[in-house]
Every structure is written in structure tokens, then in C-alpha cells.
Length: 325
Length: 282
Image (tube, rainbow over all chains, first blue to last red; front, side):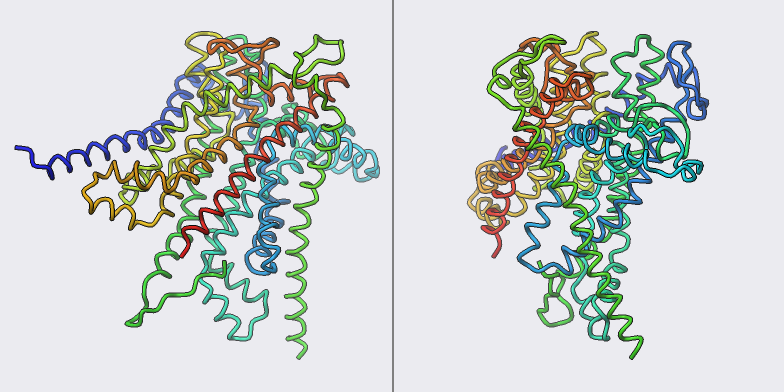
């Protein structure tokens, strides 16, 4: 016997399952990526095992594949980029959320976020024709005694680790700063007011807010790191694409993403292709872990606070003030 | 007294440094834009939009095929991503409080951070490896996979801006959840959902890495799904790393066209979002 209300609840169940299926697709996509990369890299995994990640020789002709130089290049360039971009990105976030005059806030936020809208290939083009010549001049004018230090050793090519780190840091800034700003906005305004009430200066009040949101800020920095690790086109155009493990800022090096972009279409035999896909698999796992970690950290601040501040306090119908928007 | 002055001085210094950080980020932005505009405009001409690429060594020619290819790839990507993204977003906004909703939201955010080159390898394994040749379909799929999480999350966010009383009202009148979602909530959030699509398009229009070994490149005009196809970003890359001045010139022109499109998408998206936010804020 079908009553109108039972038909309705059946309809509702159908709607939930139907839309739920599409939501499931999003989850399936991530597992699908993992499975596909794993499946297509088994040749290289079986042949080299862990040796793949400690070997320094990358020689497709003789079938010898060691990925250490690429891991080195990826980590080194990303860490350098974080070193440059983190203070700038946090400075922007603090300025926009705590200090900026109201009139300037929206346009400045728009402009800094515009940095994220420029495609990687355009950064790369600019890097090749503008940044690299500048870095080359810098290298040419580096005094002789400085070039003896391993950090600054290498021929004055322009392309190399320094150019890559500079481009990367510009590209990463908007990601870190916009999330850090979101975190600061979620910090209850009472935190700053309490600090001011105790006679704190502006910076001391900001410190109180930073301390309150420190997990989320850390999440924002890690998110930026994830972006830097996966960045491909701009890096491959300026880093020189030469696999070597060296601390020098001026020597050309290579990254995981860059080697995939460069050699994938040239991979003539199955082992070569499978080695490249294995690099992709590890890149995927690294970015997955980084992103999952940063999301958890960011959510831990933005969510918790939202719940806390929107709940009435005590018996009065009191609503905690939101941070000034 | 001395301590107070020191604290105030330190505070002033930090304020100054934060302002300097903003300036430090705006300098590269300005320089990138200035170069793209200057080099791009001086290289842009009518031929660029209407002519095909010339063979190596001959100067002139344009990127007509690459521009059509980009439009074509974006079309395929949209056909894949828009339905999936929107419906998944509707689910999150309707039933998102359950643990499964949190999982989907989390996965979408994580997927958003997966490097585009990895998505490219995935599309390669899915659509190139089985048939052993590059195709527009593979490229479109790769771009589509990148759009899905963006559309899902913005759709959810903007549906949540629509007051819940609208849903409750329609349910009270006897509508099913599906009807309430698609006939009441969706139209109210429509400008916002279009924004989400624009944001996603701005994000993928300039993507190069996932196309290198999926859509590959094509010197000729092509509209076939199962053939390699040229695209603006890949063409800019090819020309940028080439040794020819005339190709460099065209690479800048291509970069200008790309940036212009993305800028228009972003600004449109921003205007609509702000209007919508203002509309629903009480």
C-alpha cells in the first residue's frame, strides 16, 4: 500500500542516493588515481624496489633509474621557496586582516590573490626571459671568493636552483597568505581585545591572535609547501633540468614534476615509462599527505572557533562579536 | 619608560614590515603583468588569431588552431566536470553534515592540491595507454578532473548561502527534497554556481602540464576527439623553449591572450560572488 508520504520518502531516498553517487565519484577519483599510478609503475617497482629512491644515476639508455636527484631537487627548491615566501605571505595575511585601512583591504586582497590566477606557463615564460637574465647578471658579479663556497659554486648560467626557488616563492605566496588570512579571521576578536585591555601594543595583540590560530597558520604554510612540491611548468623552464645532488644555488638541477613533464613523451620503452610513473606515484602520495595534514590543521582552527562563537553564552542571548570583516 | 618605548618601537617596526610584505608581493605581480602586456601587445596582430603556425624557419603565422583547441578542450572538460561537480555539491549542501559528507569535502580539498601533472598521468593511463595514441579526449578528461573539486566546493558553499527557510518552506508545501533542491535552492544560487564554474575555468584554462602527454600537440586544425589537439598553453611552452625569436614573440602574444581570458573569468566570478553575498547577508 503506497501512501503519498511513503512515496515521498522513497523519492527522498532516491534523491539522496542519486546525488550521493556523484559525491562518491569525487572519492573514487582519488582512489582511482592511486590505483592507476600504482598499476602502471609496477615494472619499475618490481625491478628496482627501494634502490629506486637512493640511486643517483638516471640513464634511460642503459635502463638504470635512480630518482634521488629529483627528490633532492623537489625538496630543496620547495624548502627554499618556503624560506622566502613564508615571512612575506604571513606579513600579507597580518596586514590585510589586522592592520590595513578598510578602503585598501579588498583591492589589496584581490591583487595578492591575482598572483594565483596567473598560469604556471606565464610565470615560466617570464622566468626564462626576465628573471633568468637577472640571476645570470647576479652570478657574473658574484665575487671570486664567494664562488668558492659550495653554496654559490657553478657556472653563471642563470638557470638553476636560485631562479626556480624565486619563481616558486612568488607562486606560493597567494596560497599561504589567503589561508592564513582566513585563519586569522576565525580568531575571535575578544582575543585581541583582551590583549589590548592588558595594555598590549598592536604587535603584542597580533601575537595573541597568532598564538590562538597557530595550528591553522602552520596548516597554511604546509599548504604552500604542497603547492611548491607539485609545481611543474615554471620550474622546469628555469631550473636547468640537470639531475644532480648539490647544495649549490647556482647549479642547474631537476625536480620530480619537471622530469615527468620533460621525458614522458620521450619514454620509449616500458621500463622508462614505468619509472616516470613511479615518480608520479610518489609525488601524488607526498602531496596527498601534505594536503591532508594542512587541511586538518586549518579545519581544527576555523571550524572549532565557528562553533564556539556562534553558541549563546550563559543565560543571556549573547552573540560573540565576529572578527571585523 | 624605556621598556614601553621599546615595545612601541617594535610594534611600529612590525607594522612597517607587514606593509613591506604586501609591497614585496605586488612588485613581481606588477612586473609579470607589465612584461606580458608590453611584449604581448607588441607581438599581437590579426594573423595571430586567424593563421596557422608556420613551419620552422619561416616567420609569421599564428595560433588559430591552438586557440580553437583550447576552447575545444575546455568544452570537453566542462561536459565531464560540470554535472558531476554540481550534483556532488548539491549532495554536500543537503546531506553534508554526515561523516560521508565530511569525507567527500575533505577529499575534494585534497584533490584540489594534487599536482596537475599527476592528474595528467592518470588521464594518460585511462585514455592514452589503452589505445596507444594521444587524444583530445584524454586532455579534456585531465582538465575535467581538475575542475570537479573546485565546482563541488563552490556549489556547496553558495547553496549554503541561500537561506534554509526557502528549503523548509518548499518542503512544508509538500515538495520532495529533490524538487526543493533543484527547483528552489538551485535557481536561487544559480549566479553563484556559474561563478564556481568560472573559477574552475580560470584555473584550468592555463594548465599546461597535464596536456603535454594527453592532448599532446597538433600542427593542424583538428576537432576530432580521438586525435591529438593543439592548445594555447602547450603552444606557448613549445615556442618559449624554442631558439627562434619569432616564436618567442608569438609565445608572449599567446601568454597575453591566456592572461586576458583568465583575468576576465576571475573578475566576472568575483563580481557575481560579491553581489550574491551582499544579497543574502541580513
